[in-house]
Image (cartoon, rainbow, N blue to C red; front, side, top):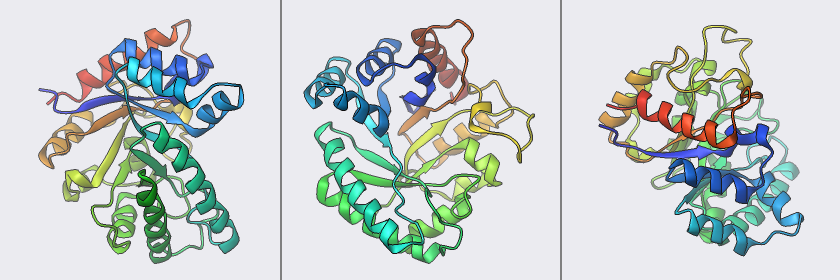
Amino acid sequence: MFPFKIALNTSTLFPFKLNVIEQIRVTSRAGYEGIELWMQDIEAYLAGGGTVQEIQSALQEGNIEFINAIAFFKWADVDADTRKAAFEQADKEMRLLESLGCKYIAAPPFGDVADASLDEMASHFEHLVEIGKRIGVEPILEFWGKAKKLSTLDEARYVLDKSNVPKGKMLLDPFHMYVGGSDFAGLKNVIGDQIGVFHLNDYPNYPGREEITDQDRVFPGEGVSPTHEIAEILNEIQYDGYLSLELFINDFKGKTASDVAEYGLNTVRNSYSI
């Protein structure tokens, strides 16, 4: 049984230097149901003469749901002026994303957050979500394993709880759980509806937790991540949303973008079947 939907985070296709239209077409042809696009790629396409309508058409023709955008604005920075600029950036980006039918936007601990308290982060996240709700795009809280603050599942759950955001959601990722030292059993304490998107990847034994980088991620089932345990827990907590393959491999050794997308889809299905 496979109770989830599958999306592709287009970081996985970065080595092929595709524009957003090409990314969408590769994702659709491989059989994915959803896609995560990066703001930098959307903006580059538009700056080069592309149009919002062309992106809309590609998504519609490919029958692909634009589930989430990867963006970087310093919503939780300790500096008030930096946060103000970040909220303005987020407003602008979410307005563009809304026109493309995007559902979520990622809100990771980007910026100077070392001296930020979790309670302050909760207040800032609440403000960010209020902006998004007026526009029609929902920010989802992401933690990074190597962040100075907001690096674990427990911290993310605390921020979400203290933010007073009704039905607020998180973006979870096995790589960041591993790097930050989060216990995978902690997923049992999460309600399925609290997960906006679940990124998928795996990681090897070496390099170790301290030295490992995003580029060391591997396809699901090809590392030491407890994929079966994670899949079982996600099913138990009734998460039935998207598993989104997010890799940062620099060299696929002769494989085409389509090869990688199709192979990745199969690894997700094989590794996360119940």
